[in-house]
Image 1: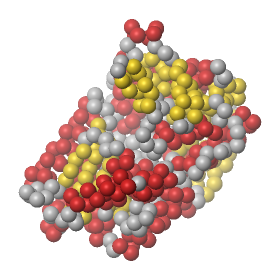
Image 2: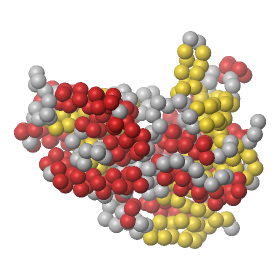
Image 3: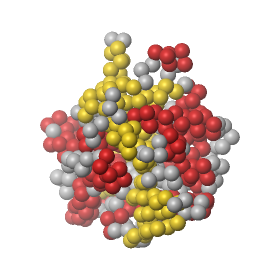
Length: 504
């Protein structure tokens, strides 16, 4: 079988695996919105592509396990190379090392960091297996594109196997400043691997600058070029602002390109959903149930970084401070379990449910429910209807690499010219959307002020702020991100990749 010009390495499989009548089928995701569909959009722009992911497999079944499957869907025809990991490998690599040691440091929560149970040898082993699978799929001079922190060691292993390939890496989480990152005992090994890349990408300039500063604290890294940050990414005034961003660094005679470009949402698809009669029907049902009340929506996971606990406490204060809002406002919160098997996330979910129960117990009446809490995911098509009914979208994580929910809300309100977005300054999206109502989730007073401002904002001001955000969301959508990234890959690989042809 022909080797691939582009190999995407990501821990999740690019489809939903469903068993029907005892037979396994691979079903395309219903929504083309989100990171997996965005990455799959690259498949139509290259002659041959592959995806590398993991799947937990019982050791007794590994001999019969089909490692490489051929997928044909609306994104094209491509190979999926699946690593059959044991339950022990999955737990050690993903649940323990990635989530208990690396995740808290990336999000600047050192008090949550747990080094003791880490088995770094298993983390290395799994990353080595990803690298082996990637190079097995890669054509000569191909681009191997690695995604996210749990695959930090893959770039160096890939280069050891195949010096001919170009390696790109995209970091979906925040990248902390050196004093935080360097808490990790494996810091030098991680940075050495990332410096083996030809291109390292981040959502916003702050994360790129933090990475380069960390690399320079650990290795003899040369700053070759840095450029002023454009107005589109708020170079001044925001919590995550930086005026300059590195674009090229040097290490051991090699040059590494640095990129800061936030992933966009699929604004065109959201536009289509907004025009769909079924969306209109669902909107009508939601509005009828609201009965004219102001509606606030917040969408997230039950992760301590997402700030849902602090948001609920702010809502509780709101109802206490402003009795005129009682029976005249409703909050809908989704807090979907991030990792149900982990004690830290169970504790977060339990606290969220306790606060939600207390609010309802204190303020609910026979005719009014102040809060609706969903602990399972809402289908995206229905979520768009909720966005369109929401006077306020309240997104205030304590730390977040980007946050696509904020962009989805803006896109869903395009034809309505109203709606207020309350956004934490500590999300990557905040530097893209400076006309949102900015909130500091570490300050009760600031959180209270932000939600008051959003609820009391005039329709004219809402329209002006929303128009500015909508221009940014539409211009820098998922298709723009894909086209720009593919052009960078062509620069890296030369004639190995075609001209960018990803449609808007």
